[in-house]
Length: 208
Image 1 (cartoon, rainbow, N blue to C red):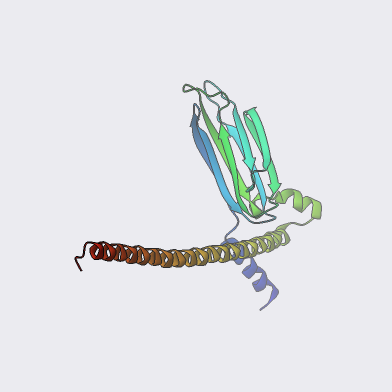
Image 2: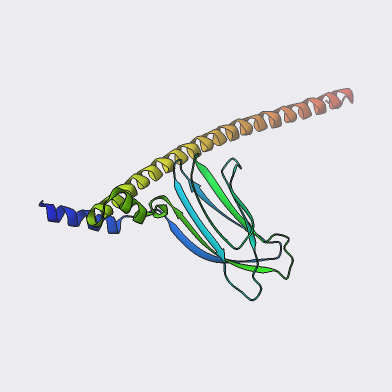
């Protein structure tokens, strides 16, 4: 395989590869509503989040809080119309971002646009290209390399989660088996006591 064919193969693989997620959405909030979004992340995942309220006749500020799986606050802003933050996950688990209207009442509403990027999609490739003086195919190959590494890390994370779930299922099944056995023994014991009580009662009454 010559160099041009190899380069073309890498480029096609990059186009077909499933890149880490980049999600954009718009949601509405009203009164005391709190909107929360969560995502399972593995250790060392890069996250970039941008948000802003959509202009309306009566602009409304919002409050934002992002927390780690252990509840540690990673970002907290009160009464803002827009914001941006990024962080690198220090632990595996579910990260949660919540939005609400401070001092909300039923007649207060807010429309928010949210952009949530993880992994390769969260990196500023223009800055990386300028800093490392790379462009063109070299930059695309760098993206492909990072994408493959990110997918590999995600597969390892999913495998660990699968092993954890399997261990939980096995533990649960074992406990259910012991519980069923204990329930059977209790039922047999109660039945035996009832038979003994009835036998004693009939003997006292001289019916048997």
